[in-house]
Amino acid sequence: MAVIPYNEAEVKLLARLLRAEAEGEGGLGMLMVGNVGVNRVRADCLDFKKITSLQKMIYQSPGGFEAVQKGYFYQRARDKEINLARKTINGGRYDPATFSLWYFRPAGECPAQWYNQPNSGRYKSHCFFQPTKASCASVY
Image (cartoon, rainbow, N blue to C red; front, side, top):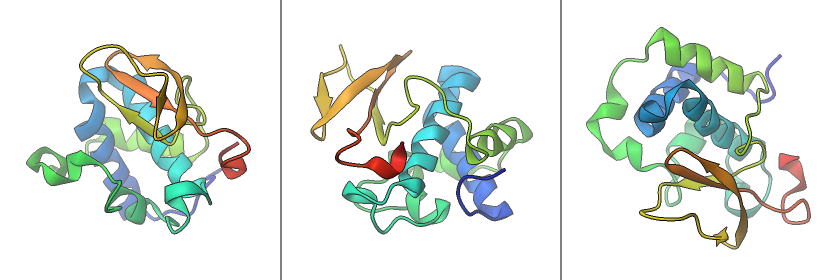
């Protein structure tokens, strides 16, 4: 059962984002990117108060995803990524992205904080950051 509203076009949009942002991280890495995206739609806090759909989340500016500026994002969604997108839309959560609203790929070690939010862990090349319950209870 979905934890956020969506339509089929948005499933494919999220699938394209997963691929463009984290294909090199494998299926689990792509699921974590999906986790962050779904969390941003769920969040009624911080930079995400007006993000009420997957489409708004993906194209958020400023604060959105670099992938939407690259041609690779605009390739057709594949079944593999569509299935991964559905898992996150249906509430799948994957550590360390479980409650994360941000991630990025640093050149070195993960910083302890990013956007004043604590590091929740690293998966391959990406560091994940989650808000505290006090700053964003709607993600938990």
